[in-house]
Image (cartoon, rainbow, N blue to C red; front, side, top):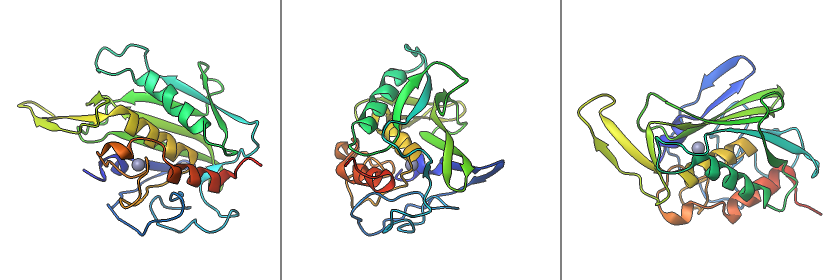
Length: 231
Ligand SMILES: [Zn+2]
């Protein structure tokens, strides 16, 4: 199950959408999280080692700039045991707490100025958890991100990922930890790719152990590498 979430991640460049199938690659540990390289999602280490890298990132860098996040999730989702809207806002807070110049994520209820859109839709795949798509205004510079949570998942907050067979289509129902998947997808939206299983980080794909369910130092270092630390 290690690559289930990542398998659904798609990167859209302009109008040309590319579905990037991700392998469960376990690269060597790095000093900071993997960053999304140009033209591919999981090309390990391609972006590391330079702050002038061409890696995918928001064009905004100044500390006072904000990204408007439209959390299109109902405050009480009757179809799910957890409140995905609350969890989305919690995840935004975790990234805003990183002492870096990454753009501040702030909630908007206006569709006219949204820059990140968070919604829950059916993936048509009972084992897809979350996905993040991008639109770019310039080469590798994000202007819009679309985070989707799969309504076919029974979301929990207990680090459990069981699947059970059912006799009707889609013949399977799976559970997943909503904090893990939501924070993982926001990590992608900020410009982080997947981290190796050998590193404890939110950006490790689908790892069920509880220590992988928070935004960790490795994730924070990735953000700081992209956007720079506060002086
Ligand atoms: Zn992922």
